[in-house]
Structures are given as structure tokens and as C-alpha cells.
Image (cartoon, rainbow, N blue to C red):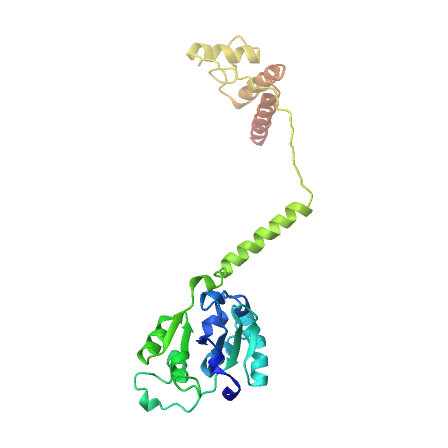
Length: 280
């Protein structure tokens, strides 16, 4: 594959990491003039980077980006050569890098089990690419530090090339609910309730000063019609029957007054006492 690429025509050869595909804006729309306004620029993808992107194709957050990148680079995989992703200027092409066998014994400080280390090792063993034109294009400091130890140039992905942070699941649900409320407010009828009622006449309360002992004796007699002590017991109101008669007369007197709530209460008391007297 590499034999079909004319390396000399490219002003920049960038080895991208997976974050460029997954976290940056679409490659075709990136401001490549910030890298080189004239170009052309070649973007190379090593196997480790492609493996990391493929693993994200079913990811809930990054799956869409991973699948879009797969569609973008598919012609390069099928043709085995570089394909254009931006006409520019500058023109930008993309291709798969062809990797030779890696001698891990010669790379003592690189761990073959670590993804970043594998990216750097594969860059070091790309076939037919002059070392002077190799540049790692990454946002992460760890692979940049590894590459610099082996004399590989590096460019850090600019902040303004990254996508805006996606909202959290809680924020997405809040936005969904707000959108639903806004939709209902525009499509559903507005209902307004108004309650009107008339308040009853104000209740008048009469307060009577407490009676003294002599007045307590006079008042019941006025109700029961007797002017002397009750013949049944030594003392007025001593018997239950007398108390009932006095209370009944009291109720009749109160009922004739304009207090609609009071007679019902006293009538209930009168009936209760009458029942007690009958049981005796």
C-alpha cells in the first residue's frame, strides 16, 4: 500500500490517535489551515488506532462518531491508497499506515500491552515513511511524551477542534422534559379556574357576666315557673326531672331568639338529657 503513496508531495504527514476521530469535529470540516495553509496534508491511521475506534462502534456516546469515521476511511481500506477527505486548501488525504514487525526488545520503555505505547511503536515501524516527516497528532500528553523520547515530532490537537461536551444523562432528561412542557404549552388549551362564593353573615357573640349565688337561685325559677323551692327535693334544681324542665324551658326561650346555630346545639343537649332521665 505504501508504495502507491508519493510521500514527497505532502508538506505534513500526521499520525492521528483515536481521539481525533472520536472527540474532534468531523475531519472534513476541521480548520486544517492552522496546520499548514498550503498543504497538501496526509493523515495516517496505524492499526492500534483503528482497533480503538472499531471498539467504539457500539458505544452509546461515541458509537455514531466511530461509525462515521469507518465510512470515511472505507475507500482507503478498499483501494489500499490515500483518498481525499477535504479539497481544501489545503488538500487533506487519509490512508492506512503499513506497519513492519516490531522489535519490542529494542523498545524497553514501551509496554506492548499499553495502547499509547503500541501507537508510538507502530509509528516507529511504518514502512517507507521518512522519520523526518512523521508527526504524532494527539490531544493526550502521554503518547506525545513517549513519541518525543524517540525523536518523533508531535502536534497537540487544538482545543477549538474538539466537539462541545455532551450533556450528562440527567441533563438530557431535563432538556427532554422542558421540551415536552414547551410543546404542551403551545398545543394544549389553557384552563383557568375561578371560584366565587358568598360568605355567611358575621356571627354575633354575646357575653354574659357570671351570676352570683343568689342570681343562680332566681334564674331557674323564672324558667320553671315556680316561686318557691321545689317540693321534690330540698333545693331548687336538685332533681334530674327539674333540671330537664328548666333546660327545656331554657331551649324554648333561646330558640325564639335570632341565633340559628345555637338552638340546634341546645336541642341536642336536651334530647341527650331526656334520654338519660328516661333510662333512670
